[in-house]
Each structure stands twice: as structure tokens, then as C-alpha cells.
Image (cartoon, rainbow over all chains, first blue to last red):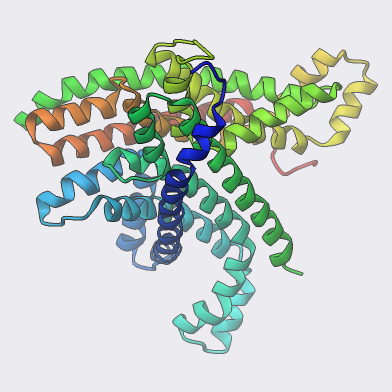
Length: 219
Length: 222
């Protein structure tokens, strides 16, 4: 017990942590995939010509963005079952984090959409393209490309928010480390290792995003 | 409505704790952001390296992991640093968001045109005057909007301190939920309270922004 950092013990708990790490990464990937699609839907709804739709979407996005993820996850896990929507902790957590980040992502898309020059819309109109074709073939490709790095940053942010899900008993990396700690009364190694895992993975992600930034830069 | 009268006082008690943590943490975060930014441009390389390491480590790991680390690991050997949950919350939030704030501040300082710095130098201003009268006031205009967003993130982050046994708003909500089973009402009310706090902060910061950018035509003479 007098060791500063017991490497033997660290090696021993490594497999359990790595296994939990897969959950963390899985939640991030599935959640981000949902967030990308839902965020686009929200961004488009916010531009809807129907006032009621765009206003209410704006309010919902603003509301979700300025309230804590933890409570939103609690709502999905504890309140939704009262209305007959029972989910496993893993599912509630993934959906919660996905919806939360969908709102952030929708703001990113919005910035991208606003960045498309007016002339592009007018040209599409002059060619009498339908509204869906205008979006699909003209506007969206130009809107999304410049915001890919910003989207990548939210992927990293989302990855770092997954430990919040441990509050509703999802056994991801943080929860696993805590469980190990409470079994052996050694918290130093598991929690420090969790921190290191997060650091390594998010720095890797971040350098990947920087790489992507250079590659997708518009000529 | 009867429910509301019953639940609100207890939730407001938690809101008080949340706000006091948020205020203390914001003060610490601003101080940390300033210090880290200053140290990152220090002439001495190890200091620069240390400040960069601080920012990267706190930005690269998750807030909850940091809070748990401070809460569970520090009291054990070899550290033996025992802090109350309240201190852990403030230190954890302050250090975490201070690292993010440092990035904002650095970007804002960089956005001040070089000519301003040179002009201040030509007028023979001291380094202190140069920073506080010329560079910082202009950097503030660019630092405040993202700074406001970061403060909202911090307020949202305070909900995590309920997991280290601090009786903030989220903790009270969970407690009430277990006692009364009025789950939907309690969590809806909690969300609304957080939303109101965030909106109030935005209103205040808008005023500060207007104050700071008073008399400056943005986008002109750059």
C-alpha cells in the first residue's frame, strides 16, 4: 500500500477497464451518428418557412442546450417509464446524450447553412430545382464541408461527456473504475488510468480532427 | 399547483448551493484562465510547458473523472489532501473550465491587431498600461461571447457535483424524487430552474458586453 502507483495492480485491472472502454466508445459512435442526423433535421426545421415550426424548434434547441445533460438523462430514465416508454439504462443514456449533442450539432449546421452564398440559392431557383433537390445537391454539400472540423470537436466533447451516464448505472469506463475502486479500496490506479484513457483517446481524436481540417478545406 | 408550493422551496434551497458553487467556480476559472494564458507566453520554457500541460490535461479528460479524482484519490496516500465536497466542486469546476477559458483568452488576445501593440509601444507605455489599457479591453470584446457560453457550460457542469454528495439542485431533485415519487413534476421544474439561471446569466453578460464594446465600431478600422 505504500507504493505510489502499483503497476502490478494496474495491469491486473487493465482488461476490465479496456472492456468498459469499448462501451464508452460504442456509446459515443452510436450517439454521434444519431446526433448527426437529428441535428440536421433540427437545423432544417429551424429554417422552415412555417413560423410556428421554426420558432418552437429554436426554443427546444435553446432549452436543451442550456440545461444539464445529467438531468435530461434522468428524465429519460426515470420519467419516460411513467408514460409507458421503458428503456434500458444503456439505451436511455445513448439517446439522452445523442439528443443533447444533436442540439449543439444543429447550431453547427445552421452556421454552415448560413454560410452558403445567396447566389447559390438563386441559381438553384433559376434552374427551377425543387426545394429538396436544392438542399440535397446544391446547398448541403457546400454547407457541411466547411463545418466538418467543428463537428469533429463535438465528437470529442461527446466522448468526454459519456461518464455522466454512469449516474443512471450504465457501466462505462468511469463507472467500471469506480466499481473496481470500491471493491479493492484502491482508487488511485483505476481513476488515474481512466483519466489517462480519456486523455489519450481525446488527444488522438483531436489530432485526427486537425488532420481532417486540412483535408476538407475548400480550395 | 399544490405540488409546486411543496416542491419549490426545497428545490430553491438546492438552487442556492448551485449558484454559490457556480459563482465561486467562475471566479476561480477566470483567474486560472488568466494565469494559464500569461504563463503560456512566459519567456521561460518549463513554465510554458507546464501551463500547456495543464490546459491539455484538463481539456482532454472529462469533468466527472476530474471531480472523482479530486474526491476519491486525493485523500488517499500518497497525497493525503482532504477537501470538503464543496471545495472539491469549486476546485474541479474552476480548473476544468479555466483550461477552456485559457484557450478563449488566447484566441481573443491574438485577435487584437499588432498595430495596437506597436502603437502602445511607440507611445512609451509601460507593459502594464499596454496590457490593461490597450490590449485587454480590445481582447475582451472577442472573449466575452464565447466566455458567456463557457459560463453556461459551467453552470450545467455544476449538476455533476451532485454525484460527489453535494446537495445542489440536482441532488435535491433526486432526493425529492425518491421521497415523493412526483418524478415528472420535479425534473420538469429542475430543468426550468437551470434554464432560467442560464438565461439570466445571458442577460447579464449581454449588458457587460455592451458596456465593454461601448464606443467601439466593430468591423471598422481593423
